[in-house]
Image (tube, rainbow, N blue to C red; front, side):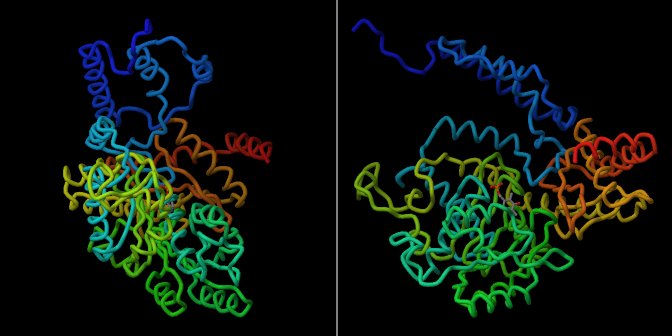
Length: 498
Ligand SMILES: *Cc1c(COP(=O)(O)O)cnc(C)c1O
């Protein structure tokens, strides 16, 4: 034995401690000064060379690795921790959440088995969620990576509970009637993805048209279900939206709950961000009916501002949930004593077996701030969305493109005398410039065929004045571009791109 035994622990803990403290100080400074930096900047081309370097065979050491991080990684983030980042539906994270993340990483609990504190923490977080969402205490749930996975979990249980056969055992080849599911045409693509993954075929998901508030047309939903029954399908599930991704529209969840009860269908709610307005007695009536769902999917990393990634699936029936994911195996036996004791094995309630201790940052954040702080922040974001919508409404150059009932505002710059096509090109260019100049980071969508600048506010750092900046800068850049010469160039760029 002349090879020394090896480990990945440091030889010099004192030196590691120094580096570790430096990292902590650097990151706290970084968070504290976030408002002073541009929201986003384009990645320089030289960066590719850095990331083309060969696989390191010999050690470079943690200090060098950290140096590389500081130079090549930290300066080019997505930008979602910034107060003027409003793209897609991204949360900001918190300094306390960063520290909790470090603690969880230190423990590095694989959340296997049940005889460990991490499981207790997750169960308590789930209990709090049930309370917040108005679900019974004996309901089931699991923390997952995000809304996409939570939709997949909820829809898996829906399929298995309502298919009329043991789908896990016999597969969809054995269903007697083809299954059909229903959602509005504004539903998030993770639902379509889940339906595909579940082997149901994306064409079994009926996209029901929406009204002018972008909410599901209930009469069309009922008519489609009736037609499907007549045509020999088995309608099994309606997916309701508590906050659509495009505009924050909320479907009539009570009407959907009534239909599902009458038709013996599963009622799933995609509440990725909107479910959390349950925290606000003032806003909660907007999502009334969600508490009647069979399953709810939502995220902590959006409107609870926690570090990525953290979502949650709540399932009313513990049995249906467990039946969907439990596969008894000798190597995962439960015992009455020892490491494998206890009953709440989360691997039996979701897709993943090995899971991170993501519950800790949620648990610690709620303890740190108290749940009422989150209520106030959510109400603040909704008030900010109203403020922006009012700015837009009162400005003749800007046009609000959809009602803004929650925290999402869609609008465009609209000078007179431009065709729809030109307005699309003009607003795209405004969006790019706002982002590339580091001013703010809204994203975009298309509503009724028209390009819209889209602002989604899941940001505890945004201030009302940040929205004044956005409205002002959109108009300033818009005016700059719409002045004849400049816009001719834009027109050329856009016609060349087509
Ligand atoms: C973000 C979002 C999802 C997907 O959630 P992820 O956490 O990104 O996986 C699903 N539905 C809606 C309405 C969303 O906004």
